[in-house]
Amino acid sequence: MSDKDRLSINVLPDEILLNVFRTLSATEFVATLPLVCERWSRIIASDSCTLKRIGMHHANAIGAVEFFYFRDESERSQMFYWPSDDYARLLRTTTVQCTSHDYRGDAAGRVGYANAFYLCARYEEICGHVAALLISSNLSVYATDGFTFVDRLTTLVLHGVRIREADQYTLAELGTVYVNVLDVVYVKCSLALRFDLKFLHAGFGQLRRFRADHNAVGVRFLDDLLHTHRHTLETIVLGDCTVTGDRWIDVLSERLRGRTIKRLSMHSAYFTDRCVNQFLTTADLVLPDDRANVIIDSNLGRISFSINIDPL
Figure 1 (cartoon, helix red, strand yellow):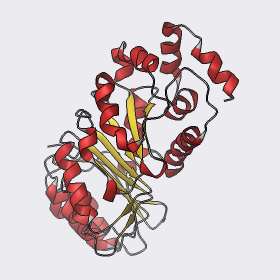
Figure 2: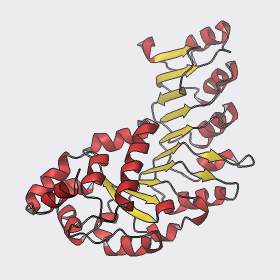
Figure 3: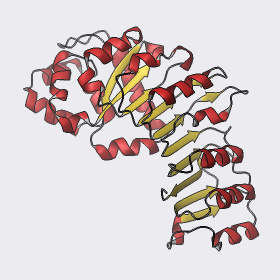
């Protein structure tokens, strides 16, 4: 979108702009009206439906905190399953807008990382409704106290973050600050060799959906995840990892005893027919009637393991 197009959209009446906002995807919204400004906040805060679709992005690398917008509740829910390219597209659009200095609309400049608390305080009526926070900054400099107004957060996404051993305590703090988080996602993150993997999930006491695209997670991680969050967990997606074989099936049988599995997909070249058949005929688990929803094979792909289970 050109500067001329951005200037044109700014002259539209408030009620027309609100309707425009409602039709935009997250990426389109960032590209169309990315800057925090008084008019933007007034229009958004006037509509309860729109408030439910606001997300926030923190990118310390470019010194910015900004909002993005979901087209509808379904798009916000599907953020958990976004391919990594979709996250990258949103962040790429944000970066381009943030580093551009030729925007001549009536909006104020972006609010920098050092003023995150100022952003939340000044636009408290919006921040209080933010449901999704996307972090692409270094956790060692992340200040949770700057986001204490974001008390309705349910989705936390870390994208491209280099997670060090010391950051495990920052993740524990995030779980304390954002006590209502249900969905936690790690995409294209790197993990220190001595990082304790349990900190990826342990601090989030209400965890409902968990996704980690990383080759470090394995069967021991899955075992701990299912045990720690056995009363709340409904969905697990593990991408880019190696399913080493029958032990994964054994963990499911042990940890999900008496539970109903709605959908299961796991791929490994190391499964034995005996173990797979025993799992599919066990009386300890309730499997879906449509066995097409249970896929255990050797067709390796980016998503190595995915499961949906009924909540307790």
